[in-house]
Amino acid sequence: MKYESVPPVRRDELRRALAEKDNEAIHTALVGLALHDEDGTWVQDQCLALKDHPSWDVRAIALLCLGHVARIHGAIDRDRVLPVLRSALHDPRTAGYAEQAIGDIEDFVTGADGRS
Image 1 (cartoon, helix red, strand yellow):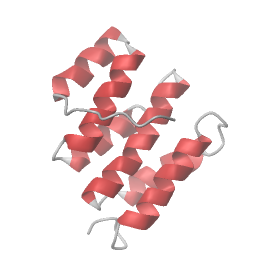
Image 2: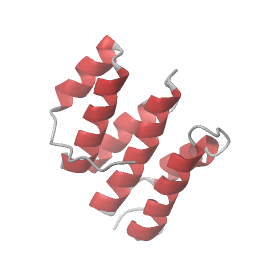
Image 3: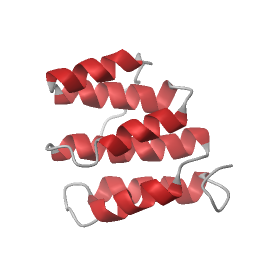
Image 4: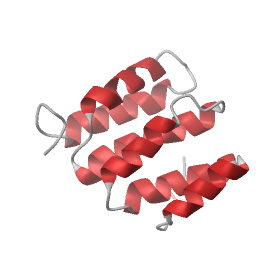
């Protein structure tokens, strides 16, 4: 995997990518939002909304971005996020992404409720 710098994106770019069913644009928008949007809860909610997306790669990026939210914001709603991540462990295509996100939550989120 090669690291590429991802610039900030506007929220409407995600909405447009979803409406156009453009998976590559969804990936770029989700990562850009996860890394740069100031409202981690909003980004978390967008990722959770994609947990049942028909494309496994969109689900995988959404899981990865949940880890980014945990790492960057130091907070996540464990009660909502962890069941989704644990469920994704059963799909070999998304398991690695879920494992990474769970690790980020364990490493970067403090407090029993997932909030710092």
